[in-house]
Amino acid sequence: MKATVSDTIAFALQDLCVDIVTHVPGFGGSEVFESYKNVNSKNPPISFHEEVAYTICHGASIVGKRSACLIKAQGIAKAANSVVDSLYTSINAGFVTFIFDDNVGSHSDNIMETENLLKGLSLPYIIADSVTIYDDVITAFHKSEALKLPFAIIVNASEILLQVEFERQIYKKNFAYNRDILQHVVHPLFAQYQYSIFKSKQNGVTNSEIVKPNLIKVPDEIPEHSKASVKRYQQFFNVFQNFKGDIVTGDTSSSSSYSLPPYESIDIVTYIGGSIPLAIGAFLAGNKDVWALTGDFGFIAAGHLGLLEAALRQIPLKIVIFNNKKAAATGGQQIHRTVLFKILAGYESFIRNISNPEDPFEITEVLTEASKSDELRIIIANY
Image (cartoon, rainbow, N blue to C red; front, side):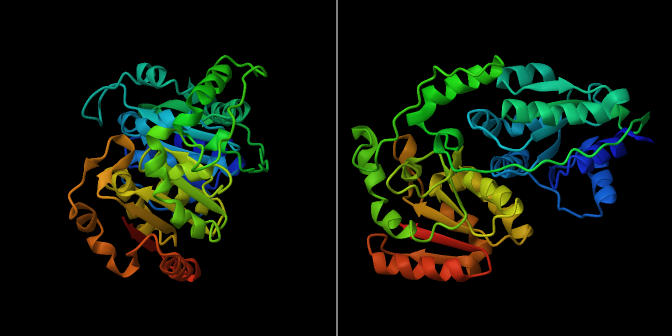
């Protein structure tokens, strides 16, 4: 078969049964995205920020669906916060980021040293050869699945319309998701263990001598320096554990300690602000009862970027914002009380409030309404 590099990548994604593809417009990636839509007779929306686009794919891959993110070289720098945390998780299905490198600067504001950036991030990658691009895409997904890590493939954007020959083959595979917070929750309690696992994967070996950390009980066994901030959410989680649904995502913050036993209320956690795009990925992968929990600082910093995408895609996520009016996980720095509501000004019809998060009856009433709704819900728990 003969086709452009752009179409060839699209055929490879189809043959791998990659259903979840995100894209932020840029030279090279936009051409492939159009090819993907034409080949698959789909019309997925564009994304506006690479951190969100990357994280959606990451969430989908954890719960067992192959995914691909199409971005330019400058975009991987914007996604770096999510990239770094994603390396300390184990994915189940292949996740490949296609980085379209404009190495002569014909369509970009600068020329990126893309390989140096990927090496600094420790994101494993290969450099595609346009002649063998079909096989290179297949290889990238297989490497991702073998390592259980996100993977990248660098594509020369200037060669995207070259004609190449290739032979097609179906590479369908089913993947299972099993809850495992040591593999899917990035948390300071697990940092040393997850770093050791990552280094082991990097070296291509399975190190059976890496000792798993004990799963302490929340909140009583939480370290003293953070126990008070964690206990603050206990009443909410006493109720929420009855509403958990298919998947619950969180941010690396105090509330995500409730991923621990006996509550086990949160399943997937990465960077501060990442819960909403992670939840979008889990939803697109087939889970329809998905909750995203975030603090007001994380939401203001990054989470609102994911909310925009959820709203544009009309995904009925259930989002809980713990409104502390401070950065509780990073020292208690104050947040002006108006900032959150300025960001949410366009979402009034979706907002529900918990005025007293110590009242189990009010919490139950609000969560019940949200869980039964077929629309987006944004619950603000006002602490």
